[in-house]
Image (cartoon, rainbow, N blue to C red):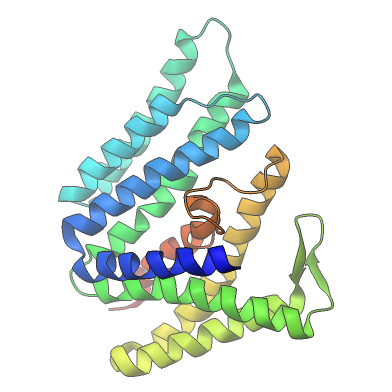
Length: 261
């Protein structure tokens, strides 16, 4: 616990600096996190003798970084999807033996880690509602915190015992309630004009964030690892800290562009 607290004391000021500064600092930070994250994801499968293509993972992240610096236009995003898939398929042709499983994990890692994570940048680059970037992290933090304490004090019904034995239905409900509460407070204080939207984002984002947490747990259980990495002592790797955010960020972004006018 002491190690976790010390790590958090160093990480929180850095996080606040990156979010408040935004711009190229945020872009570069997400780029670095995506590179570390996809490396952690591929290393997890290496543990069970499946070898995804790290060079393709790196190239896909660099290409996304380059595109996102200038635009989030759908045409460029479609080009990114095409190039990434093309690289995976051509790489298969160049191998002496075709490895469909490794290629599938390569593709999944690119879309699950790089594309999902880059929704943080998409929100930050939005001309009108970039402030909603805070919601991504508030929803994830509130859900984790309230779920933990609700589950600790009131949890009795197992949520997904085969995936994450400690999670409970009561904890999940508490996480959603806490997320809605914190989102409502933030909306009231910071963005009262879209308060109702903040409450809805808090609800939807919390549910998807918990799906993200469970998804990361499935992969860890499948590959037989405890943590994705050790970059944050006491907390694990990037994916251990961003597992729910990988789902929350797209939830906030798509709600923002489709429902907030």
